[in-house]
Image (cartoon, rainbow, N blue to C red; front, side):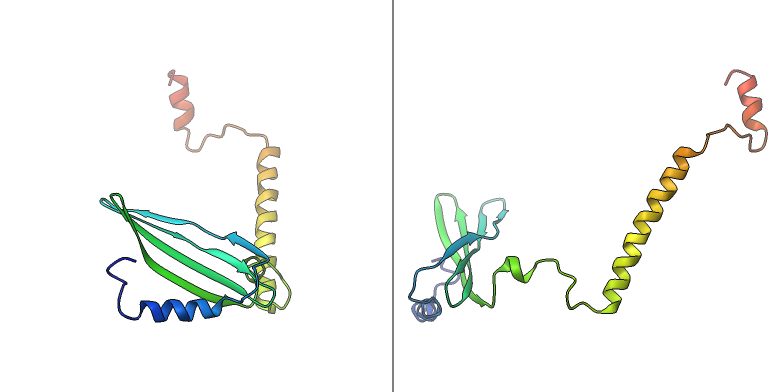
Length: 143
């Protein structure tokens, strides 16, 4: 443990965290992220695995700090979750309000309109037009 987080309550904190874990073996363990920050003299790494147990899901975050050859734990968190992060954050239109459907419809219509205008641009014959006559004057003199 890093000296910045180590205190007299560390043992009690770890005991409380351990009590959150069920006694049965996990059904799956997935690493759901990896965050690294590199400073001038040190680097910190946070790797959160997600544990699936028969009765609950747990998201665990372990943050470490490496200075030179010394690597220490600077953070350890256990968060119970109702379901996997994949299911909690998946895209779904079920149960959304009318305003969200309106925004989605406007976004799709905008995309379709942009493609329509792009096709029109390609279909039009590009003609050289003289705006004020200066372009044709310039071209006559070899510009």
